[in-house]
Image 1 (tube, rainbow, N blue to C red):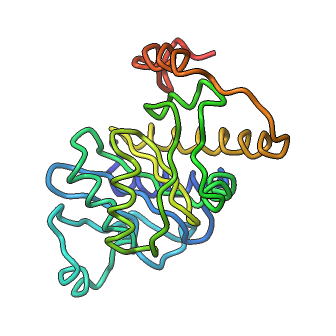
Image 2 (cartoon, helix red, strand yellow):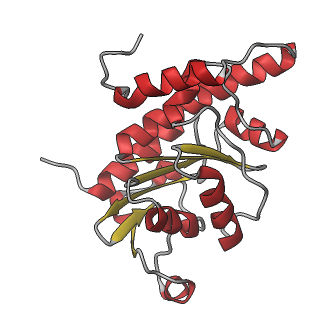
Length: 219
């Protein structure tokens, strides 16, 4: 039997927990279907979350409507909504508070092209946004600006956002970003390393157009 979108969101949310990419009630997950999006709820620890707790929202939902809801969406619903409104290619969003990506977000650094796998996110770096308080429209606007057409960004002093056409791939991207963030922090301790050139990254980006979790090109 096919799983419902709510069941899939619960499953991925718990995988983020078991992989150490979120903890407690941190982070959030959503999926867009037609003119609605389904998002993890506010104030429920992921460990105890069930499919019935996932909240369905219209892409046009506003703060007044949210205030009247008995079961409320994640406090970060603003940026999920705005990403879906801005990016027609995005149907799933994963937001993490993973340790290494969050640490780099506190440094307010972009993750540069120290490794070719950075191209997995669509560009030659993963950018970090300016700081805005969580759950605000200002944060949402910063995420949209920093993300641009790419698949990942860091949020200053906060965590990371991954976007994809499907939920499984967004989870895969979250794992890859945390692995790269760990490597980059180790390199920062050394203090000297070589970045790939613009031409080298352009070549990788072309090759990555068909790259993904099930691609035969993986090494």
